[in-house]
Each structure stands twice: as structure tokens, then as C-alpha cells.
Picture 1 (spheres, rainbow, N blue to C red):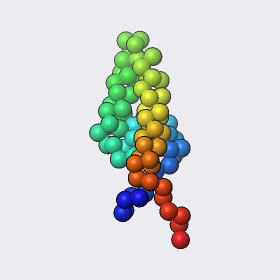
Picture 2: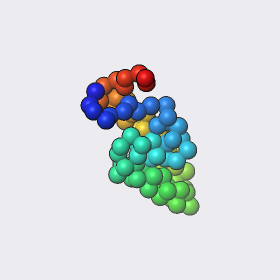
Picture 3: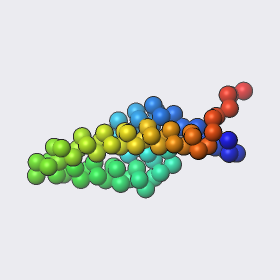
Length: 86
């Protein structure tokens, strides 16, 4: 494990993205990607007026949750397991 690195909880990242799309990705250390997911979700809501957003809103939301979960797993694999607390 790298010094100063902590593991990420995939379930917590998923829950954060359930509440605010992109938040779990931001928590995982990818703020640019998380901001794009959030922006895509907001734009999708605006497109609801043009009907296409009805499909895009849940699609972007689900992708954000999936990406947050997988991002936490990738981080944990790259940085090794977290030692138990003292």
C-alpha cells in the first residue's frame, strides 16, 4: 500500500452517486469525470423538455453509480488493502 493512501468503499461511492450523480466519482479522486457526469445529468434534465431526456436522465444516473462503484474498486486494487485500524 502506498503511504497516505486509504481504500475506497465501493458501496459508499455508489450511495453518494445515488444521491448526487457524479459525487461518488469525485470522492474516488476523479473530480473532472465526476463533474462531467453531474453536468450530463443536469443537461439530461433540461432535455426532458424535448422528450429525449426521459431516456438520458436515468441512463446518466445509472452510469454515474456504476462508475463510482467500479472506480472505488479500481482504486483499491491499485493501492492495495487498507491496514486494520489500531
